[in-house]
Image 1 (cartoon, rainbow, N blue to C red):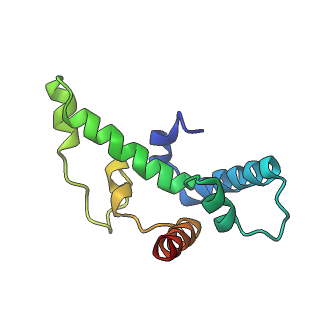
Image 2: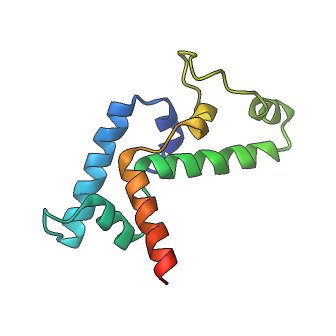
Length: 118
C-alpha cells in the first residue's frame, strides 16, 4: 500500500476511506485490540500515520527530491502552482491544501496532548 501512495493523491476520498478501514482492521488484528478501542488511540500507540497523512508526507518527500533532480524537465514539473480549490481537477500537488480527515485530526490532537503532558 505504501509503495503506491503517490497514486493515492488522485483517488477519490471514498476510496481512501476504504483503504483506511482495511489499514485499521490490520492494526486491530495485529495488536489483538478490543473492538471498543478507538482507531485514533490505536494509531497513536502504534505510532503509525493514517493513510492520508502518509500520502501527504510521501508526496512532500517526492516533490523535494524532484526539485533537486538533475533532469530539467522533472524540475520544471515541480514548480507549477495548483489550481484554485473550485477547480474540478485534483492534482497531486493539491493534496497539500486539503484539510486532514477526521482520523488524522484525532491522532494529531492526541499527540499534541501527550507532548504537553511529557
